[in-house]
Image (cartoon, rainbow, N blue to C red):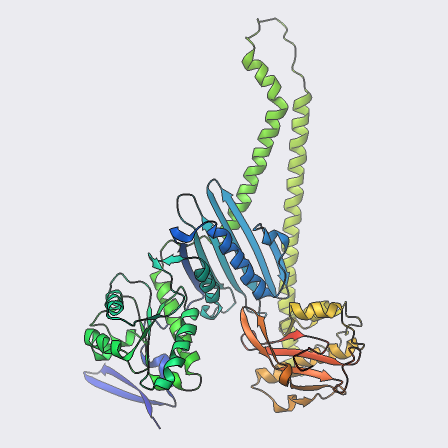
Length: 574
């Protein structure tokens, strides 16, 4: 059993003062251990990579297609045709809004998508991907994640590293003049070791180096290689992952001394600016016994991810990609310019014959009373201008009204959620007067309106409701209301064993594990295991009497996600 202490040394009244504080575990010691400049967090993260010159034909189209595939998997929805054609589009599903814009000006072509998620009434997270290219410079991919919540948090968990890894696997990408690494690099030869040491001590190095070493026990070495692969995918674009065999760790120790080295299964993150006389607290070290314990891999990965993201933020500057808002404004200006060009061409066509006659014919002899010009084209031109101006004014008025109505709606929803929480604190039930739907056609809208912020139907579940045959729609609504109320409250309070088994107040309904009916489901860019469901009609598979509601708990969004309903899912044994 280890005892951990925080020792503080200070000076006061001309003498040295030493204080000691006991902590229960190593995890409590970690945030206070170093005070390192790399341990911070931020509410915005930007990463950029350029397409290598040898990428081949049409690399930008491949990038856009991969981004659309990532969007489709994140939303679990089919994208509109405009999106598949790489044009501007807009799509809303549940609490998620997705938009796209494209700006083509001369030899430049910039395409961007943005996905906004509202996992809770006070949370808003936006992820942007920009794919741009010009005739003079190779293409580039820019990723930006920003937390627009009332109280912004760290955005490292929202960073789409899997998307950048998929792009790097299909197209050679560069970052900082070198090939972007999306897989770990194993140092297996002396030549590779010399190159690694040169890069490690290079003062111009900007990317953090995550160095993983193999433990002395051969049985654990294959596990380390698997962990290195998952870590490399998690920090793609932020850091480079290296794997050192035991023989190479001795070479590293000889070069940087023992207190700055890493060996025997430990992990270390070498930050930019590392030197042989650097402070060891600026380069986080995690020993093998901490990595190998339960949950140690996840904690080490999250710590390396946070520190690498902070290093990217501190590097700052650079050639960042334009934001989605900037491209949207540029697209609006381009559209206005095109409208002016159309008006110019129209005027040229209407008045072209008169101007050509003036240029080609010799100037007429002066006469005391020249014939007046025909007023036809001028009248048509004035009428066209007035019509275009009137339409533009009507469009602006309608646009302002729509924006105002959407803002009022969002404010009303947030205020309603706050009032509902106040009613619950005072002992009331804000859902007692909400009428349950009577048809499956009303069901999705009822969920979006009544259970917003507490329960969400996935796209797959909504599609199943279109052909649902279960007879008792009200029973299914009561079950979802129970999930959004009693079950969610129990999860937020740390769990409640009484929520498992028979559901009080709903006859014949049980909340039990799925067993062999468990399955994997992608939601909000992450993979979740759906291993719980509400069931009724255990002895029948008649779709009119058999109810199954498959769901999982999203701890990040603090709400229930319904993945499938209302019928029984087929598996390999049924």
